[in-house]
Image 1 (cartoon, rainbow, N blue to C red):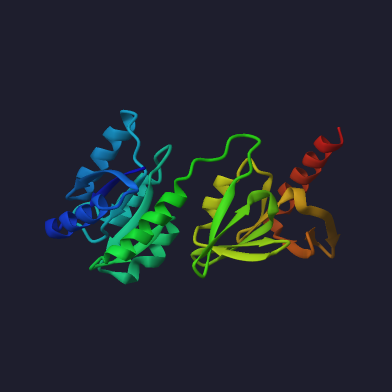
Image 2: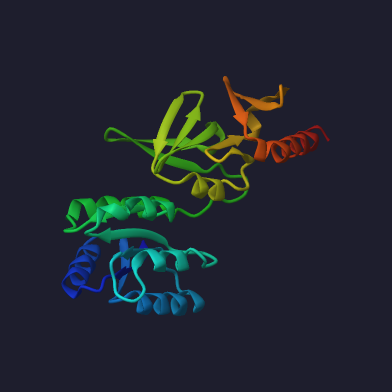
Amino acid sequence: MLRVLAVDDELPALEELAYLLRQDDRIEHVMTAADGVTALQDMVQMIGGGERLDGVFLDIRMPGLDGLDLARLVGGFPSPPRLVFVTAHEECAVQAFELEAVDYLLKPVRAERLAEAVRRLEAATVPAPEPGQDDVIPVELGGRTRFVPQQAVWFAEAKGDYVRLHTVDGSYLVRMSLAALERRWSDGGFLRIHRSTLVSARHVSELRFEGGRVTLTVGTETLQVSRRHSRQVREQLVRQHRGVIS
């Protein structure tokens, strides 16, 4: 069950959003704030007091502290809540997803569209797996949900607001940022080899140096390592495989 905060300076819009959220069985509790400053104060008080806050449904155009600035401040929290932007301005979508928003809703909000945002929020707030467990990413496939285990993923590529997971069985598109996936799988043996590519070390079978270029063989694919990441990737792979041998 989710605990969320709805933020909007327009009272009718705030009341409607809170009402719709309270109708959703996946929502445990809905709090509201009528401006960015109040929302920030409420979040600091809640999180500082040990209360759980899973998500913030956030308007963008607000006087004083607007939604994007508030989102940047929230991103500095030790365990920030996930963000869903709810706005009449579609031109801010790129900035919103750069801030790792779970979803971006346009006003007026339809109940079925809000329900989809809640589903995405719920998926994004699944607790990290316990050590020894394999994390699983749910993937929507035309009305079906496929569960892709972390250990099956060869590598992940950033594709705009999505990540494409490559496995032996094919590739799957998931709506999340590569940075968020990297944090989620930080203990799972995944290496950043390029600003748009994350690789599973367990599936790397070869590291090759040719003409100043560094490439990896991952599954059946050959991937280039950026100059910026070459040294770190080589050291991590050598260190990891030495640990396996010892």
